[in-house]
Length: 492
Image (cartoon, rainbow, N blue to C red; front, side, top):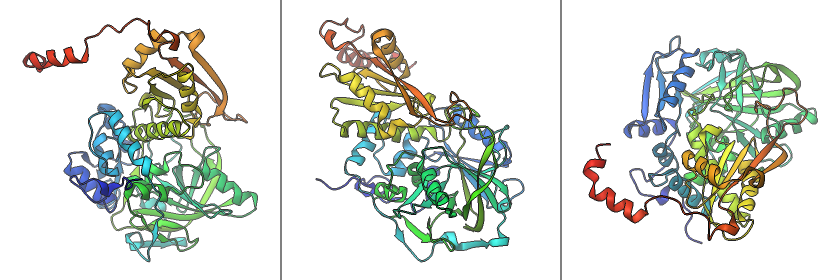
């Protein structure tokens, strides 16, 4: 096996990974990938502006909100760090490419030799520049935004890491769940059923013990990228992200519970959830584009420490009707994960995978294959539907031939319209893993199940030889015509 593909394997403009969020922001601005906005209020204006930017064009710039009314000048909020090919390539140290599938391929190439690298424990770091303890904790000092008009309050945790240690096995989970500010030293914490953080929390509470937790809400976007994906159970997101970075993340241990927190984080809250201690949480406009989970009683986190840097930067994600300020990167990583898992299961002939932003990066996934045997397309569809990367909150999996670009929704719909017989080529898989955030799951349902449609939009295997030919110019003719008449075509 060759040398693992890590950040340092590439020697472009940056041969070394960024140190922290601040250095990443500097690199974004140098690349023309940052929009600075001054004077936006944390109540509604930030959320609406993040929506306006994300909907203005695909691969919109990252946004740094400055001069926030009512807060010290140095307090800032950062949004959309990974929402373009260029920024994602910069973040992961991947070669810059022109097409979406090439970026997915580059990510997959990395994953073939990816080796998790555990974090390195250090004595101190910038996160210790300020520490508020016990009664001195006051969450109102941070510009936690009210993102949407119908939200039940301000949310300090949207682009966050919820850090917990499994009490039985000792591994550390760092995942993304929403965190609502309730009071000066209390928050809510909503975790979807089945998620790893919920399993860990339940272990503590079922034993009658408080669950220690860190809420990191300002950090390296690489950690958020790892935390917001379905990394396998038992693998710490710190290790997963370190493997992409090519070196360990530095962590320091928290004062109260000895949990690891990024040494270069911006804001970290430390507390615990007591069994039976809950408070009304929500509603919150979620990544499905709906208020699908109404107000409910959720565990309350009692905060005993607030660690933060001088002039801290809060990271914000804006879940909403897609596209969002985080959906693009999720599409890349999730497509790469599904592709990788399908091939590891033994399927050959995969040409590409894409998770469409319109399907909230989860609910409309397309896999392209070069058919080699009868049943190949169905096998691909079933694997892509049920693998770890595709299992949570899915809806449609479409299988297309190798001549169809899975990232081009027009191409995909054309294939569905002309190569799919609904009676023969659509299979339904029932009682799959869903979520209360699914707008079709009734509120209060005892089982968060949904069904999946696996759509075979490939030419019938038995008709590959005689299926009607596609009416279009050959690649060679098209290239020659484009070259010869480029003067005219460039005017378009």
